[in-house]
Image (cartoon, rainbow, N blue to C red):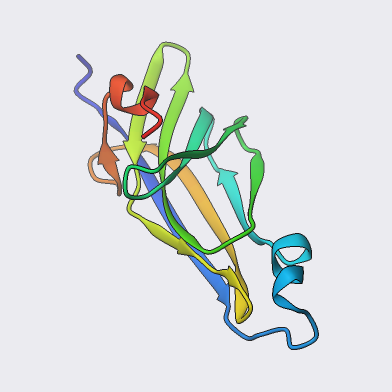
Amino acid sequence: MKKLLLMFVLTMGLIVNASAQGWYSDSDVSSSHNASLTIMNRSSYSLTVKIMRTGERGLYQTISIAPQSSGYVTFSKSDTFFTKTKATKGRETLYKKSSPFSVQCDATGYSQGTLEFFVSSGRGGSGQGISKAEFDKDK
């Protein structure tokens, strides 16, 4: 086993637009004013990111992101989520689970957030290491 472990360093910043857009109705929120999350892969690893609903409610969406690329996810209603991430490069595969994050999408406003994934050498990093079996579960 390698002495040098690769760890995710997950930097997550959620920028919440909390001000209401007074000119749209509640029905407009779900159709034209969705919350969004941009996921940026700042590494040479290929990422598979599962957006999971908290409370054992299951998979919301899976997105694959090439090295040095980004992906985009939209949300039509407020909820709380976490991510399960698989990073692959050659024979190396790493799995992580993030802390929960909230998404707002209602009459008072909508979230616009960014997740940035870095894969670097050394100890530390944020998020919980998980097994392949845990990553494969959609709950």
